[in-house]
Amino acid sequence: MGAPFLTIGLAVALLLPGLSFSALAAGKPRIVNGVPATSFPAVGALLTSFTPVSEYCSGTLIGCRTFAVAAHCVCAEGDLDANECLAHGLDDPSVMRVFFQHAGFFDVESLIIDPTFAFESGGDIALLTLTAPVTGIRPARLDRAGVRNLGTAATLVGFGVTSEDGADTGVKRVGDIVTDLCPGNVNAAKHICWSFTEPVGQPGTDSNTCAGDSGGPLFFATPMGPVLAGVTSGGEPGCEADSVSWNTDVFAHLAFIDDFGGRDVGREHCDGLPQVGGAGTTQFTPAGELSRSRTTARFSFEVPAGTSQLRVALNGEDNDSSVGTQPPNDFDLYVKAAEAPTRSEFDCADTTIGPYGFCQIQAPASGTWHVLVQHDAGGGLFQLTVTTFAAAPCAGDCDASGQVTVDEILTGVNIALGETEVTACANLDVDADAAVTVDELIQAIDRALTGCSGV
Image (cartoon, rainbow, N blue to C red; front, side, top):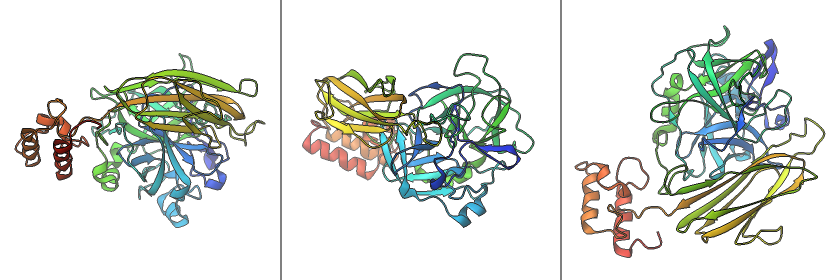
């Protein structure tokens, strides 16, 4: 895996130094020795919104509308501390978009950086507020234990380049590392570090971050599932062998995250949809490569009966035009039910300039669907992520009988008053925040009056 590295004085390389948007064409690193994946659905790519669309940082959804990245990703002049960054200004949220393989594109409403940000010292974290909640994906849990033992296994995730001179940002990769001592110039109390040597094991082990991975996550495994322990920050002398890399320690900066993320952080569920990877969802995740000599890739998949929403997402290598001789990649997405789509016959298409695309279809017909990924320019790897979601449970239908009764409404009132546990009627807790609100009671009453059909 690789994260965007930018070599600056003292041979320090930022995983995705705070490049200005005008400088986004400069080199961008990714996860070195990582493997392509569509796992960790809460991990997304921070993109430019102008064309051609391209990736320049990675990040993690930690609330329904809260996306965590590195502070240096959003400092307009590439500044290395909060004072300079704020003095020169932050990047404009209106030219940012966040892409998730299982949820598509989201615009950015606002952003804020940790006021303690100082590269190598701490606080290299920024929180982006999205204009709409991300549905169907469980936000990543934060590491609130803070146990730090050297030699702990961890997983890196990012959309960055795979080598220091690479141009392959845009593909999600994962890699495993083992924590190690931080270099003397890095504040070990505020960072999680590891050493990267020449890969000796299978791809995906002994990995590293590089350009484009900046802001991406480092996960620790726990009995409750992975927790976000680090935010990719930097490394030296680069992202190849014999380098030492570091992530800002999430536990050491929980006060900032909790203060500015508010109640949105820590949410387990963002809407009534099933969550990716759980019951009520299916996934189909093929990958391929396009070039001038191989201009199309076709796939087919099955949509189960009762599917309320179909999502088809495309992401691929940017092939940054500042590296190599090929033009930036431009791949188009076409989706159609029952028969193969063409450029002129389709149910949904995304022809945005760049290697990204997204189609969302409500209440799709069950049966066989088809996808066409079409080459327009450049060449390289792409990933396709097809996700289906069953209908959301009927609000207030505690026993899943297909109707909401007066007794179930009364159960909801008792839960709202704190006299009954929410587990007595999980379907009343529509947003899965472990509480029943007046709005949720109103939804249940509406279902009692109008029925659950069509939900």
